[in-house]
Length: 370
Ligand SMILES: NC(=O)c1ccc[n+]([C@@H]2O[C@H](COP(=O)([O-])OP(=O)(O)OC[C@H]3O[C@@H](n4cnc5c(N)ncnc54)[C@H](O)[C@@H]3O)[C@@H](O)[C@H]2O)c1
Image (cartoon, rainbow, N blue to C red):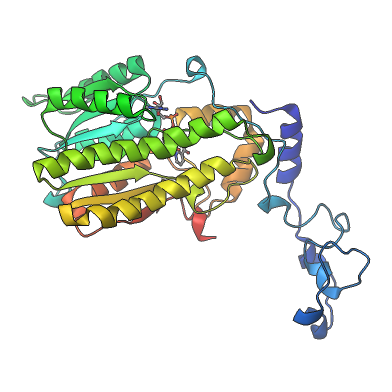
């Protein structure tokens, strides 16, 4: 968890400050002209350079802390992925219905499809599994947490029954143990899924995790595990499902859950391996989209921004200053709700997006636009 040192830093970083360039007295226009050939090194403090006054090469302190401070990582922040027992459980979201009288495009329906959702026991994976069930699909939840996967599968069916009273057709939702970073475990779980569902048409890869260490002290075994789950796990399940689809000569859709961290660098928490892993997921989606286009298998990526899951909520409840800093950087001014991914995953999984292939759909409240 966060150290007290971290809290001090975050508190300092969130204190409102006027950017120092904004309060400097006006200078003659010539001062802003930079001579490219004579710019001194930014570390050479002895050299007088007007340009320095507007850059991070200047000494901090003249009007508060240094510019750039809000756009930097803080190596003091360390957040280890919590132990399973310390994680709050996720519940299906309420009131989303299923069969209703509102008109919509038939191409959004997933009736008759079977989808696998890795990491579907909780968090974003569970909400996306719910979106697919609501849209007509049968779902196989694949997760390392066997008990929670089973509970969530039962919870989805119960909620479906409640929201669709009198329906005679219930969706089939099953739970399967798998460590997605292990090829053996992936093969075993997929064989089990085929025994229960006969076929698979869709895949959503949500199994993944993040943790925060500065790059210099990131434990190598943790880094390997992080890449093993986020990158290898995504790759292994995608290849397994694509092989099955090709054997059936059936079209299909794969949605990989990346992150805005694959496109930007989050601050202030350092997480270089996670960011690189999510960039890999995004490019894996594009690469496999091209490689499997001939077989009618589409591969797209969803890159969520900061989403308020049970897990992130717990971290932020303990660290309100961090929440302030995160939301201050989101143009829409708030974190996303897991439900905000329901439409995105249904769109990319269904025929509504038949010509969308190799895309990265950012669901981040415009974070990555700034
Ligand atoms: N929560 C966010 O703000 C956010 C933002 C961007 C991207 N993401 C990404 O979304 C995905 C889901 O995140 P979340 O917030 O729902 O996390 P979460 O921890 O709530 O859920 C992740 C699920 O993956 C499972 N899992 C972990 N390792 C596994 C493994 N080796 N094999 C199988 N299952 C495994 C966990 O048991 C858990 O059920 C992750 O890939 C994450 O990187 C999350």
